[in-house]
Length: 478
Image (cartoon, rainbow, N blue to C red):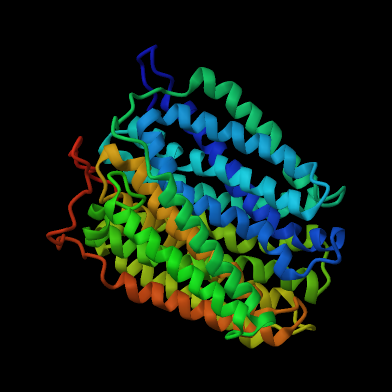
């Protein structure tokens, strides 16, 4: 329903602009997955481990900056943060397209990650502050389903864009970004900042970035270096030091990356753990499917894109149907069911996929099962976690949840690279799918600890700052 106040733009138009920014970020991720073999052709001297940083450099920085960016969004206003993030992402996309070397491309991807980290939590903050509490559950699910739609369109668009060259994968962001900026400056609502506290802990975010990056480096390089060689052990030790430094910093800073109240809230904490675990499985599944079709079967980028579509296309439809049953059964059973479906899809690939396998009978059923799993798990976990937040912490809290999923995504890509080694090593794919299936089953196990309808734990109320305590009723409904 549109607003009638002339000083406020219609909600529908604002939602379209916000979703355009979300599509910008999600579309880029899935397009780049399809572009990996093309990048390998351009820089043929680079290993899969080197090329994986085109994905992981983005994911690591995006993950670590999401929470400080969410806090900054709460402090300076969601509209300003959203537009700034869109501008940075668009400019960095232009640099990606012009990259003369792999190193420059990785650096440009870091710029994209900074823009995406500003854009994403601000986008959900704009949406949630524009709608009444009873409609927020549906809004959250629609916001999450946009990622599934982008996942479905991304591979097809990537296949089309890769025909003239991989640089077009990044150039496509420019018209979307510029259009969002031009219309957003005129049409986006400008709610008052919800936080006047001190600046977020940027040093803590830097420590977290370095810790995730070191861990990913160790997992990616350990097969070549040796799991307990001197260099690998040094990376493990550095990771431990950085994690301890982050925990100490986080516990003492007045504006920590992860607030203690979030950790103490059972619903939010369990959803966060489940998001991290499923991030591993989700990211690993995406890159493994595209790499199999292009490197094992030798498919073109366009054919690979078309072959990737059915799974992600299931996500928005399954998400809408699942939303009708959350209030009746609670989030736990839906996530468990999704975990079983996703694991079954990976198991199908383990049993059926081989160099001479057929797409329709051997890959497609697994893709559909994983797509159903994603539709049941991701929107449910996001809605459950944000339902534990007060309105003044929507951007920050959603940033933490997205951060945790991105941490899992970085590890998922690293696990795939470590398990596969060379992209044509068939046994490596089975190893990766076994590990990813185990991560999915752990996700389902964690979901068993989510509260059931009518049984809200004592620590399960909405997380609020000292400045606000408005309850986000209905955020898990619908």
